[in-house]
Structure formats: structure tokens, C-alpha cells
Image (cartoon, rainbow, N blue to C red; front, side):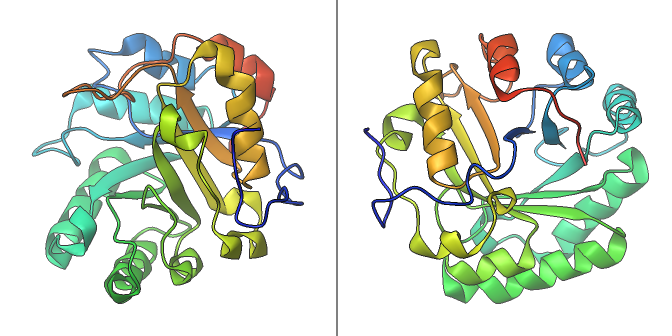
Length: 249
């Protein structure tokens, strides 16, 4: 096997729950209507989907995004508003202003904090943000997106951490932090682009081995200015069938 863990043994809890998808944000509904329609398809094992109107909620309510957010809520899909933390440099007031717009315009059920810091020194401010978001939105589901394993204390302030975000070439040789073994798979998410169809089984084994409960794999690449998450992977139907049917919480 080409993947590693810090202990050299599989996570005992990784196989306990069913894998599901976390969608980090498709293109605008006018540009990606098929992608948004797929998210509402019955029995797709979807844990959450991110609404990113314009690197945030945008300057005004977008009727097309509202229609998709409403359709997903009706399908019992958890919709998260995208908040760019900018590695802890984004002013607190700006983040709250964006959060209010997401709640008022799109009635989101939580927030996806993108570009979160990873160091211990950044934890206090991110904890403050998460606590305030939960006060604004009862039952809010909060995802911290670090893209790598952060200081362990972050896990106590989020519902889920994105501990890997990057290309397949790195993922297949990635290692899991030892502290993650103290938490169940539903606390961790892996986002991987450039995964060839022929390596889907291997990628799924890595996710389970490393204890991730939520994934998003795509064959699209992130080279240049291309956003690999904006469109469906070419093997969407295949990976949905491999994971199996499910419903969002």
C-alpha cells in the first residue's frame, strides 16, 4: 500500500460509519445547473454542501442561489455558508457581517470556514468566531478547513475539520496525525482533486484507513486558475454507487 499512518496500523474506528460527501462548493447555479441538481437527488450520501456565491454571500441576495439553497433544504441537505478566514487575518466584524447575510438571504444551516489557521496561536480567535456563529444560528454545523492536520485543540471547536485538501499525488503518500485516533471519523473530512478513475478504490481505502468520515474526490485538476471543485467529477455516479445510499443528517 502506498499510504501511511503515523502508527503504521489502520484506524480501528474508520470502518464503523458510512462514508459520505462534503461538497466544497460548485460554480454558480447558472453555470453548473447539473451539479446543483445532482445534490438534491434522493439517497445520495451527502453530509453537507457549501454555498459560495462570490467568495462569500455576495453584495445582494441572488435569486438563483436562493432557489438552490431552498431546494437542498427541502431535500434535507445541510447547506453551509462559505466564510474565508484568510488564515486568521480576516476582521471579526467582516466575518459576522457575511454570516448575517448568509442567514438572512439563504437560511444556511452552518458555516464552512475556509483557509483556517493551523497553529496553536490562531485557535483563540477561531474559537471566538465559531462560538459567535453558533449563537447566531441555533444548531449551526461548523466546518474548519485547514487542508492539513492542525494543532489538536481545533477539533474541540468545530463539528468537523478538513485535514486534507489537495492533489492525489500528495494524498496517496499522506500521513495521519496520531491525535486523530481519539475522535470518530465523522469529525474529519478529506478533499482530493486529480484522482484518476482507476485509483478510486485506493483513494477510498486511504480515507477509511486514516479515519475520515466525509470525502470529496474528483478527477478534475487544480492546475493554473482552475477550481477543481466547481464541476462534478467525471465518475460521480460511480463513486456514489460505491459509497452507497444515505441521507444527510
